[in-house]
Image: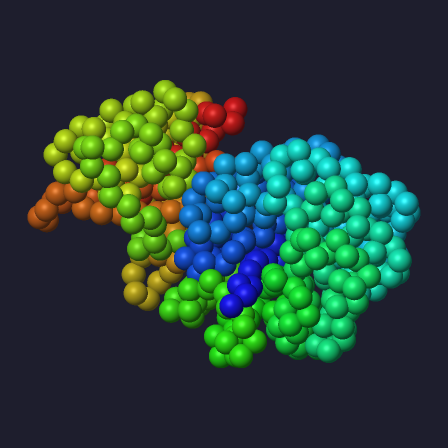
Length: 469
């Protein structure tokens, strides 16, 4: 049986959609779901915001266990260097050179003439080869390229070190038989393709992307580019279903986790749905989400550092030592869950002088009125006031804080729990905010869980303000 690799392009596709803009945490959760689905590669979007996007890719690279991570490299040597730095820690890193080869695309995307494009391919693939051996060269818009030029471009990419060549029908206008014949024609005219992996990528303009991709496999391709959800190209579930039902007849198989694919696809669909509004909770935060690891007294500082990274934190050496010391105090008595490690980090890491202090808050809520929050914060001796309505008491309180500070931060996670029992129980809240890709957590404790939540938000806010100023 011939194994067909499947590369998922969901993160890359979502980056092109303003309506499906994803938060840092949602992108990380999608990567985790794809890892459980056991696709062969997760294809990332190009780095736009270098600081934030590079941090995301470093986090994904050290989190996924089963998948390779494919990173587009842009059009310059400097962008290749940045892309490699972002995924160098991955178990299976892949650098991805995407170059449009049709006359129209070269003119409007690359703004280069054919000769300059060929030279660029040579420079990019050679630069990638200096970092790793797994290099994917995508001949974008290959179906509309001049045949001789397409042949030249692919031969140069292979001679410089490309290990995979992706043939893309960017227009999505080919029928399955036409695309299969197109792949066979390239393999006959370019003998070097016999020495590399050939991948197929088809747009779904005719609603035949899955059929085109499987036909390409029958013509010699060994990899398919797909997405977990959406209709822009073939979906992973469609490809997996075809291989499951007919793969034995054609001598092909894939490594997709067939038992979990439906559940994981549903999860990714939920994460990528369009989100509108201005609530801090619009990113779909749930107190039930999170990692499920458990640490104990036998775990060393490296294990704690790895667990913190899994939660999304990049701790300094000083903060890591503080967290490990507090962790040991707890671990000597009992096991430490992910949520408990979160609370430890929020309590001891990046402790800073407070820029904002809570003076007072008043919350009005009920089953027949919208919740409103009136907050007074103090900054530099001046009192600042905010009044907002929201979807619940805590939402309105967070919106009032945002109104006061004039900034919206991504709410990465929100946790509440009781730490004592009885009518006078003390509650603790952990708020995780993300700014410029970096995670900041704050902790609040009070007999009033709303008060604990407000204190936790302000605690995280003060850490952001201190570090960024």
